[in-house]
Amino acid sequence: MIHAHSPSISNLKTVKLILALIIVLSHFDVPILIDINYLPVGLFFFMSGYGLSISRTLGKDFSLIKSIKKVVIPFLIAEIVYSLFFYRLPTVNFNSVMRLLLFVDIPLPYAWYVRAQIVCYVLWSLSLKSKSRFKKCCIILTGLIVYSAAIYFSGQSITFCKTIMCFLAGVIYADNEKKLHKALSSRLEPLAFSLIGFIGALIITVLDSLKIIAFSNHNASKYIVSNALTCVFCICFFVLLSCIHFPRLKNAYLLNKLKNMSYELYLVQGIGQCTFIKMYFCDIVLVPISNLYCAIACSVVLDILLAIGLHYLSTRIQGIYE
Image 1 (tube, rainbow, N blue to C red):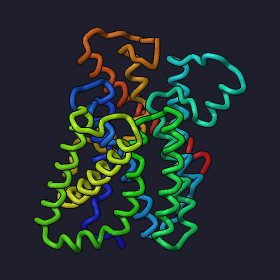
Image 2 (image 1 turned 90 degrees about the vertical axis):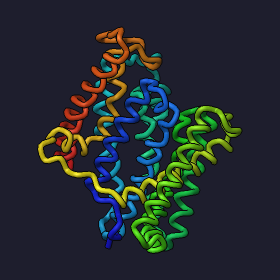
Image 3 (image 1 turned 90 degrees about the horizontal axis):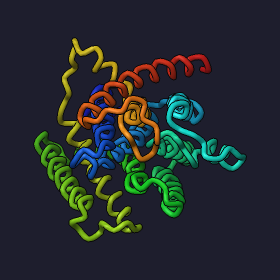
């Protein structure tokens, strides 16, 4: 049974949508957001681990194949659309094709998250073979460390190395949520606890991102500290989330629909950017707009429309193969 203070499904979906929008805006180099854009990514990983653990508590069976299909099918559709308009494979040979198939080289911008989520699903599946919570966490931790080291030494996504441990933090938090809220028995105590931790972790993280404190050099210690801070941030955020409730807007049909499409919105953001703005990852701009703010607005609107279409199409495809 879920603890009474667990965030509601509606709340979590609302938060996911807000986080996705923050990530999308941060990739336009919006001030402040660009410096802390890995915090929303950390929360996505945290909620993934939390959701899997809560589902297990409720007695729901985990299917690795179904979970991977849920993230891969929309990704492949977005990948095809992006590649048709914006990407040209430099050299077509066996090595380049295999790197694409194995998710080593992913043309779709920011799609490293898809590969990371698949790794988390695989590690979760392996951890279920153990009945001990401690051994389960050790399996996940070992796998995340090995994969993070591979990513780090191959010079790939920095954001991944700074946030991936939040997946494990989400699993641990879900297993100990009741104990934490019991320790923080009154309504005021969890609110104060979460606000202090939330603001403290945020301040330190911002100082780190602005290179004001010492561990801002790009080395392993930076990623260890960043993971620790992001995990603290996520835990405090979730405790805070249990104290509030987002009202459901009855007449906001589009907003309520979009709450189920945060993942799709994340996937298509690169397409929206390249349509109107010259980005470092593509040489083609379909409809160049000189005014940055107008371009951002048009890009976000296009992202929302693409996310709706992607969600509809991927849901239909998944329904065919189930």
